[in-house]
Image (cartoon, rainbow, N blue to C red):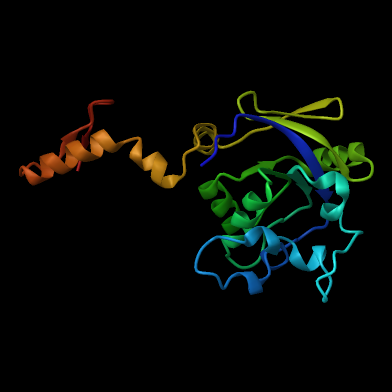
Amino acid sequence: MERFIRLSGRVAAMPAANIDTDVIMPKAFLKGIDRSGLAVGLFHDLRFDESGTVRPDFILNRPDMADIRFLLVGPNFGCGSSREHAVWGMLQYGIRGIIGSSYGAIFADNAANNGLLLLSLPPTQIAAMAARLGDGVGEVTVDLEAQRIEMEGHAEAFDIDPAVRRALMLGLDRIGETLTHADRIRSFEQAYLAGKPWLMNERNDERIS
């Protein structure tokens, strides 16, 4: 998983409330046996009409959005059915972070598991940031180490779960996070196979059973 420490890039405003996972990744793109090709599916029915022609009025189809890295979204983004493909598609498209006020719970879990940053700010702050963008497009810098967003000459602080922040900054998914404890896991296995189903936790001297 790619590390996220400090990143600058284009941001697009999609302020509508309740953009669900079926809009983010239509079910037609859930049939593959792997994760490939999902960038095409991202917001497919908003980006293309029924004949496959590009909709020029959709914000992500603008010529200046080729290097988009962030979305500024409305409340309850990512609600609806559970489909990890929505997160995979965003990352394949180049989007590394979402800035909004609230998210669907399962979407948020999928994002955390795959390295897509979700930032939660009060609705008033989101509205102010959207107003600064004017035509809905701008530049933003997200500094995960300093926990600060810089946009159009303004800076906003944000809170984030320490475990999520650490995983993003180190580029660790759940498996990678588990493997950081590989030495202790092996020690426990060896102790268990030796007939000692417990292991002293060297860090805090507590017994794990």
